[in-house]
Length: 127
Image 1 (spheres, rainbow, N blue to C red):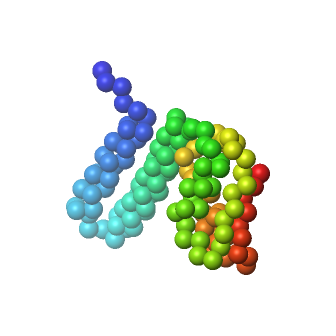
Image 2 (cartoon, one colour):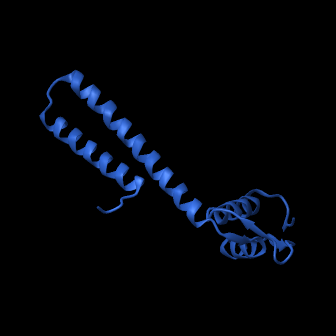
Image 3 (cartoon, one colour):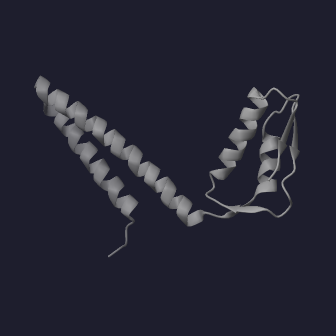
C-alpha cells in the first residue's frame, strides 16, 4: 500500500468535499439551502488556505538551511533599486543564521522599506 502524506490526504478530502458541494449547488433550489451552501463553500476556502499554509511550513521545517547573512544582505541590495541610497554591509564575514527560506524575503523587505521610506542617503546593515 503506497504511503501518502498527511497533506496529500487533506487535499484529497478537500477536493472531494468541493465536488460534493458543486453537486448540491447544481440540484438545490431552496434559498435557505443556498445560504448554507455559501457558508460551507466559505469554510472550505478557509480550510484550503490553512492546508496550504501548513504545507508551506512543513516544507520549511524540512528544508531550513543555514544562511550567510552578509551574502543575504548583498544579494537583496543588488535586487533592490536603491536610487540615491548607498547600502553599506557591515555584517562580519561568516555570520550565519539557521532559518527557513523566507528569511530572504525578510531582508529584502527590510532593505526595500528603508530605501523607499528612509530619510538618509546611507543604509548601514550591521550586527
